[in-house]
Length: 281
Ligand SMILES: Nc1ncnc2c1ncn2[C@@H]1O[C@H](COP(=O)(O)OP(=O)(O)OP(=O)(O)O)[C@@H](O)[C@H]1O
Ligand SMILES: [Mg+2]
Image (tube, rainbow, N blue to C red; front, side, top):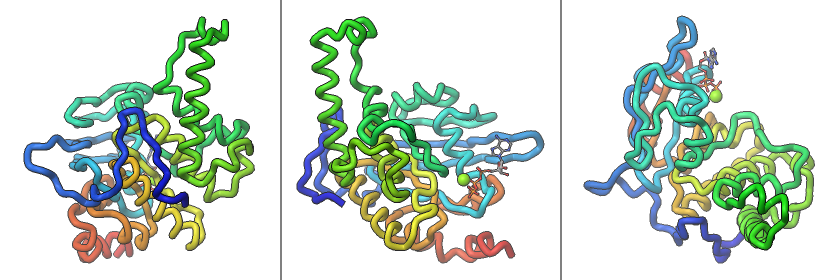
């Protein structure tokens, strides 16, 4: 992990030296994410049924539950992959329900996937630049004619992408093909690419899946670091309870598409119903 001394500014200039951790809702502030009564059925199966959650700015929030509980489907609903049958999704108080994936990303939700999705044949640098395209715009004509404004934007994008890569200790591998990175670094690159879109909310779907204990420990540090460095709000799905207990302030537990319980991490993890759901008793 790169040292804290690195200073990377996102487009909104948000750089934070820490202290956002676990801050509870301040009276009168709008939550970064508020979801009410979100549902979707596939055929007869209610994959998500009346889901609700409130996530405050800067929170590190966990979504847990047994296999098939509906966790990834919640992410797919939040990011417009599926349109909900019922419910409302508010991002910073703005209703984004039913919007297209690209629009939701531009509004400020970025995600990583349960199975890593990188542009495998592109370089590490180009993978991050794909994310940056959200914010750096030049017209097609400027691009084709290679006008000065095109070069200026390209230069800025390269610099910004390299800054982001150095935060994740990936700058030395910037010219590698993404598929040639070891697994743990591909996970980091996916997070870097998501951050390049300058989100308000970062969704991580099982970031530690397939990692060994050392990689998982390093990932925990990376996630903490991202939250502090970018003052980021993070919702993560994870089966690794050590990771969840180590970094999440609050949890929601899904079971058969429904919220079983939600609250502070230690309380939720000690809830008998949660233990029962996981053991399948
Ligand atoms: N597009 C779809 N069509 C039909 N069924 C689906 C679809 N997407 C999800 N499901 C079903 O919805 C349920 C919830 O799936 P989901 O992938 O959200 O679970 P999950 O909690 O992420 O599980 P895991 O921990 O195994 O990743 C499952 O029964 C799944 O088969
Ligand atoms: Mg899943």
